[in-house]
Length: 414
Ligand code: SAH
Ligand code: SF4
Image 1 (cartoon, protein in one colour):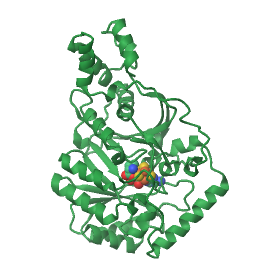
Image 2 (cartoon, helix red, strand yellow):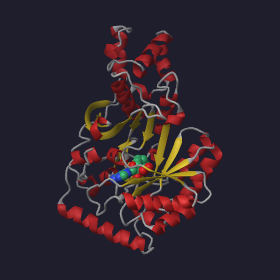
Image 3 (cartoon, rainbow, N blue to C red):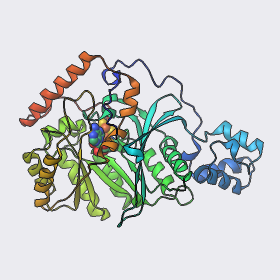
Image 4 (tube, rainbow, N blue to C red):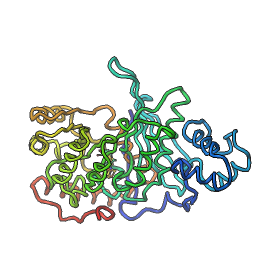
C-alpha cells in the first residue's frame, strides 16, 4: 500500500485560507436522511398515493439511479417537485484512490459547502473460515474537536457536524460501487473523520436508516461505533440496549499520557471511560473493544501494558493493537512489530483477549483525515517544528507522570 505522510492544513493553527467550505450549504435535506414517515407525509400533502413514496425509497436505497430524474416510474412533475424539496445525493463529488493492491479504496467526498470528508472501503477476500467481507469506514463530522495529536483529522480541527444524509450517503456510494460488480457491503464502521458521539443524534438517525429493513437493511451486529471516550454518549447508547458494537479508542491506561494522546481525557478521565464501557458490556451482553494506536516509546512500554492489564483485569473486553500510521506534525513513529508482540503477550498473560491489526490499521488511519489534510495544504515549517517540540515536551512530562495543564478542547463536554 502507499503510506500517505499527510500534511495537516493550516486550519489546525487558525491559518486556513478557506481551501474548502467556500460555498453556502444547500438547504434542501438529503432524501436518505429523511425518516420514511416524513417522506410519506410529503406525498400525502400533495394528494399523491403512498406507493409513490415507497418507489422513491426503493430508488434511494436499492436502485442504481443517481438523480430523481432517473426514476422512470415517476412523472416529470413529481420528479421536479422532489428535486426542488430534497437532494437525491448530498455528496457533490468523489475522488477515489485505490491502495493496498486494490484491497482498499479511499474516497474523498466533497459535500455541498465544499468541505471534504473521507470514507474508506476495505475488501477482505473469502478465507476457509470466513466469507468475503466488504467493510466501509465512514465519517461522522468534517474535522474533529477532540484533537488527538497522532490523527490527521485532529490536526485539521473541527469544521462541522455532518447531516444524517451526508453520513448515510457515504454508504450509498460504496454500496452502488460494489453492486456494480455484484458485491454487497457487509460492515460499516464509524472510524473515519470525527467523533460520532459528539454528533450522536444524527449518527443514531443514520444507524436507524442503515439498520431498517425497508431502507438499507444492514444488521446492527455489522455496525461498529468507535469513540474516543465521550462518557455521556456511551451511557446514552447503553440506555438504548443491545445494538451495534462499541469500540473505545483508549490509547493509554495512564491519565497523564492519555491527557496528551486523547485530549478529551481531561474532561472524562480513563477510569470513567472504562466504567461506562464496563456498564455497557454488562447491560448489553456485548463485548467492548478497546483500540490502542501504538506509538514507539510513548504508549507501548511494559509499564503501559501493566497499567492496561490492571485497568481491564476481569473485564469482558477485547483489545486491538494498531501500529500508528505516520502523520505529519507528530514527532512520533509507529511501534515495531516486535514491541507490539511483547506488549500483547504481557496483557494476554493477564487474561485479556488481544488481537494485533497490522495490515489494515494503516488504512483505518488513512481514513482519519489524511486525504482531506493533504488537500488543505502544508503548514509553514516553523509551525510544524513548534508543534513537534510541544508534543515532545508534553509527552516527556506525561511519561514522568505529570498531568496536563492544557484546557479541555473547545466543543467537547457540556
Ligand atoms: N473519533 C473516533 C472515531 C474516528 S477515529 C475515535 O477516535 O475512536 C478511528 C480510529 O482511528 C481511532 O481508534 C483512532 O485512534 C485511529 N487513528 C487515528 N489516527 C491514526 C493513525 N495515525 N494511525 C493509526 N490509527 C489512527
Ligand atoms: Fe477525533 Fe478520533 Fe481523530 Fe481523535 S482519533 S482527533 S477523536 S477522529
